[in-house]
Every structure is written in structure tokens, then in C-alpha cells.
Length: 371
Image 1 (cartoon, helix red, strand yellow):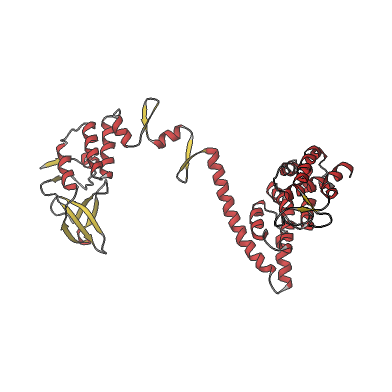
Image 2: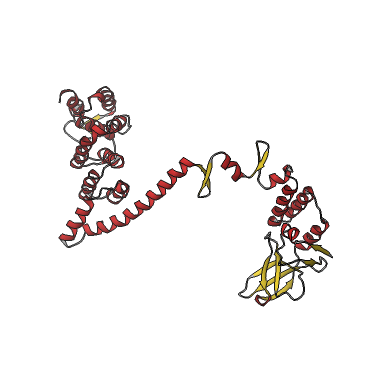
């Protein structure tokens, strides 16, 4: 029989209420059934007489669990890895070394007693701070001559945790802003769903009210939800979307309007978007730059619409690049005089691209050069 003090029992993973004696010859593996059907596998630790609780050391926990005896309905003998663990723990003696704890931790690990193994590795490095093998088992790394946990190392590197990942403070702020924006966009999505239903209402007053509320939107966070809600609608819906985007200030709505010019098959709706971009152009040079970059597209319809937009914006600095782009388009064209859709008026047709006569293709260039 060995008498264990409170500190040692805690280090060994045994929770106690007061000092008591452990007789390892009496410890056995048990299957403990609680009221309600919960089954625990481990050992019931011996206690002083008169206790009204069972203290159960499980195979998966580092700290024993305590239950009133009234909650236990059945105890059955069952083989357990703990049958061998507790005698091994006793053999450590009253003043074990860090190496001894490390070795017992390795044995626990081999028996899949992972929580107990960690407890012994932790005790090992407390007794011997330079015991590298135990530090590595705990996932520690050496930094400037000291062993630190991964969390401590990340903190020393200036990183912070955000939703289980280590990121820079700047990245954390960005992710938080994106999360907040996502919440706002979700709110807008719900509101737009209601307004869309109002646009289909049989009551003309409700339809007008829904349209007015849409046109009053000024929140930049609403840009993406608006595009998602109306972007695939028939022309009337896309036209309303373009007008809504025109009323929203900020870079997000400007980008959305540029995309409307490049993707919108209806000339009238493209013109609405371009008119708004012309108003914003003096304060946002990125508008012209984006259309200029679109001249490099492999899609001739996109190139044609970008050229049309640059002409409408009177971006004469883009003339040299525009000329090269139009020449490339003409080299790839299959001409059909006086037939086929204009590249400026409709979606990309199936099959070979068929454009009007060459003079029409150069219209954007002529507009830039001669007005």
C-alpha cells in the first residue's frame, strides 16, 4: 500500500477530495453503467470508507470523473489497460525523475492512453526543462534556446488566432471586416427578396413603392446582393438593377457598372451604365484603365464593347492600344456585309463571330479620333 499526497495525485491524473490510500492490488478494470444508459470504461479508484462517491479513472481522460453512488446502476469487471498502468505508476516511487515520467508517458502512448501520456510528458518537462524528447511529444519547438509551445511561438512571431488559424493582425482585421460585411450582405439579400416580391405584386402602388425603395439604396454593401438578385433577370429587371447601381456611391458600384457595360447585351442598358461612369470618370481613373485592360480580352465582343465605352468616355490616350486591338479583331473576323448582329448590340452568337462591314468595326476608333 502506498500513501499519495494531493500534489502527486493531481500530477498523476487522480482527482481527490482529501488524502487517501491507493491499494493497487484492489484496482481492476470496470464497466460502469450510469442512470440513463451512459457507459464508462476504466477503473474505480479505492477511497476512504464512508464516501458516497465513485472516483472513476477512464482510459481516455487525464483527470478522473466523480459520480454519486446513487447514479451508478451497474459495475462489471472488464479488462483495461489501466490494470497495468496504476502498478507502473506506483513503481515510480515518491521522487521520480523527468526521464521516468517520459518513459511512462511513452508506455501510455503505446497503449493509446493519450491523456495520461500527455500528463506524464508535461510532468517530465516540469522536472527537467531541457528534456527535448518530452518537449517534442508535447509539440513544443526550440526558439532562442528555450522550449515553447506552438501558440507561444506564433505569438512571438506577431501572429494572432482567428477562428482556429494563425494570422497577422492586419489579416485578422481584414477577415473580421469581411465577416461583418457578409452579415450585412445577408441582411440585404433578405430585404431584396422582399422588394422583388413587391415588384411582382398585383397592386400598382406596392410595385411603385418597391421600386422607389430600391432606387433609394445608397449602401455600398448592397452592391453584390443587388447584382445577384437582378443580374440574370429579363431586360426590365436588369435595367432597374443598373439604375440602382448608379445611385450607390463608391468603388464597388463603379466596378459593377463597368461589368454591366462589358456583359450587358442590351445597348440601351449599357448606355445607362456608361452615362453614370462618365460622371464618375473625373474622380476615378480606374474606369478608363479597366476598359483599356479589357481590350486584351480574347473575346471579340468584350473588346468591341470596351472600345465603344472608351469612345463614349473620350479616352483619347487609349487610341494606340485601341488601334492594335481592333486590327487583331479584324484579322479574326468572318465578314458578312449587311448581315449579322452588331458586336455592340447583343450577346455573343453561337458559332463563328459574324460582324457587319469593316467600317462599322472601326467606328469606335473614328469616334475617338474625329469626334
